[in-house]
Image 1: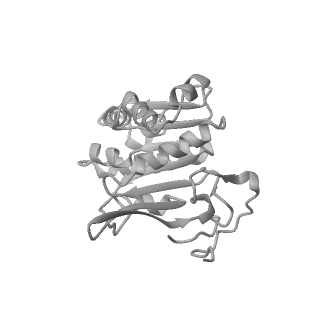
Image 2: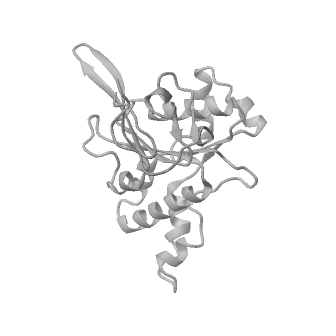
Image 3: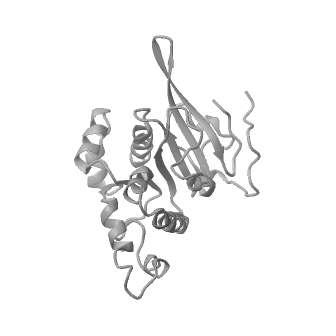
Length: 238
């Protein structure tokens, strides 16, 4: 099958500009042999399809080769994530000791309270958000990969204030562009999604969209992966 879906945007991609995830069969779906470094990628799918595991496997594969990775969780605790990764035989504790893998647990309500809780005084939302980073990267740690698990948790925390979420989202994408890290943003969708994020804004801003499926066929379930879009490279659709 020829790797052809969307023509790539105008940008020269060198071998050093390609992130190889190390997931068997995945990198080969791209004409350049992986994901363009610095891309912001949505990883979408229904509950239980393996979105978090997919992203954790990428972190494991890269951290094992000394590439720094940051995993930001808005839901699960650090201990639960470590336990999950260890169950796959991944040496997450060694990566943490070596300083190439950091897991951060963040409360979306706390972040939003810090960013928007002072509104009502003399400052506007835009003025406040300009002063505060949307997530915190440990001092001296320069991740090549960042995973956010998940944007859906942020949406839930801002359900009564959609404007706050839009402001946060715009700053989040700008922040990731500045870090130059390849970023994976997990979003939960319907089992067969008609859109790939909670508001639709995310997929417009993102460079790539990867969708995971777990589809019932008769008495069995089959897992599948679809690359909906990926800027700067051609890709197969599977």
